[in-house]
Amino acid sequence: MEEGKPLRKRDKIIRGFSKLLKEDKLKVVAEYIENPSEFVALLKSFWYQDKEKQKQFDEFSENTISNFHIPYGVSPNVTINDKSYVVPMVIEESSVVAAASAAAKFWGERGGFHAEVIDTQKVGQVHFCWKGKKEILIDLMPSIKKELLLNISSITENMKKRGGGILDIQLLDYTDKIDNYYQLLVTFNTCDSMGANFINSILESFGHSLQDFFKRQEQLNDDERDVEIVMCILSNYTPECRVKVWVECPFNELDGIDKSLDGKAFAEKFKKAVDIAHIDVYRAATHNKGIYNGIDAVVLATGNDFRAIEAAGHSYAARNGTYESLSEVVINEDIFRFSLEVPMSLGTVGGLTSLHPLANKSLELLGFPSAKELMMIAATMGLANNYAAVKSLITKGIQQGHMKMHLANILNKLGATEKEKSLATDYFKDKIVSYSEVDKYLKQLNVKTLH
Ligand code: MEV
Image 1 (tube, rainbow, N blue to C red):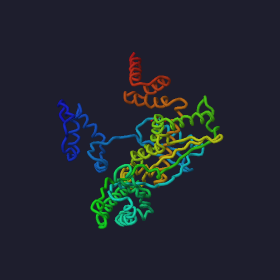
Image 2: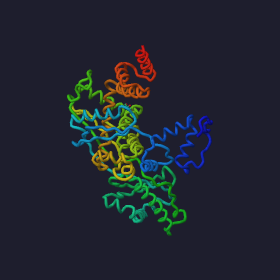
Image 3: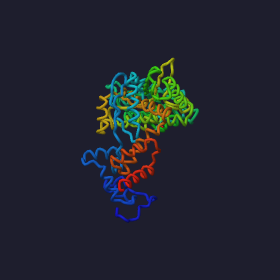
Image 4: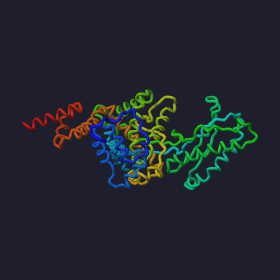
C-alpha cells in the first residue's frame, strides 16, 4: 500500500482473499488504486464508529470492506384504501421520490389509490430425471407425496401454526422437451415471510426423499430405482402471488394538468402512451423500468430482495409471449382508470427485514404492515411513479424536472456556495444543463465578483 508503488496487475489472481482480515483486504484492494492511502481513508470514513453496528453490516455479505450509502427518502401523503402512509424509499436516482410524492398527493385528492391482493401463493420446483415409464411414476405419486410430506413435518411445524405451509405438489411431465425430465411443482403459503429459506429447505428435503423412495422400490429394475435430482429451488416467477392497484377519476378532474390539454385530451393521450408500451417492447422496457423505480425503492427500504421482485415482474410482463406494459388504462365513458397488476413476493418478518436497523424502522414507519399490506404499498409506489413519468412524457417531457436535480448535483460537485446555487438555478431555468456549462458559468460568476 505504498504511494508510488506500481499498481497491482489486473490479471494476477488473488489467492486466499476471503480469509484475510478486513484491514488486510482493504490494503490488497488499495493496490489497484493510484492513491492507496486516500482510498483506504475514504472507505474507512464510511465505516460506522460503533463496532457492533459495523460488524452487523459486514456480516450481511462477504468480503465487505466498507458501506455504500444510498439516499433514504420518504413519500408522504400516500393514501391506499383510505389509509394514509408515509412511505420510505431507498433510491439513488433523482426525481423518483419527488415524482412519487407529487403523484401521491394528486391522487390522494381524487380518492387515493385502491389496492387488492389477488393471491399470495409461492412456487418451488424439484427438477429430476427418471428413466422409467411415466405410468409407473403416476401410480407411485400418492405414496411419494405422503412420504415427502412426512419427512418435512419438523420444518413446516411453525409455518403451519402461523397458517401457512405446503398447498400442493404437482407432477409435471416434460419428457417431450428433455429426455426423462420431470418436475415437482410445489406451491406454498409462507404467511408474512418471503419464505426463500423455508421453501428451499423443503425442496432439498423433497429431492433426498424422492431418491430414497425410489431406492427402496424393489419391484423396479436398477435403472428405475435411480432418480437424478438435477436441482431443487424456489421460482422467482410468482404469478399467483399478485397485487393490483388502481386510480380512477372523471375526465374533468384531470383538467389543468397541462395548459394545452383538457382532462379528456389528457386521458386519451395518456392511454395512447400506455397502449404503445403494450405493443412495443422498446417502450415497454422503459415504461416498466419507471414502475420499478417506485417498487424497488420500497422493496429496498424494507429489506426485501429487489432482484426477485424485478425478475417476477419482468417474467409476468412477458406472460403472453411478448414483453408488455405492466400497467394499463381503461377509459369508460368519461372515467379514466389507470391500473397496475404485478406479482410481488415480499416479506415483513425474517431475513433483512428484522436484521437491518433501517429496514426495521421502515416497517415501523408503515405501521408494521403484513406482507399483503406491503405488497399493496410497494405496488402503489410503482403506479405513482409510472403515472408521474407518463404524465411528464406526454406533457412537458422529463428533462425539465431531471435537469433541476442534475443541476443541483453538479453545483454540489463543483462546491458552489448557496448564493452561486441560487444564481445558477435562475440562470439555467431555460437553458440546457451540462457539467461544462455549469462550470463555465460559475467561473464567469467568480471573474465578475473579482472585478
Ligand atoms: C427513468 O428512470 C424512468 C422513465 O424513463 C420511465 C418512463 O419512460 O416511463 C422516465
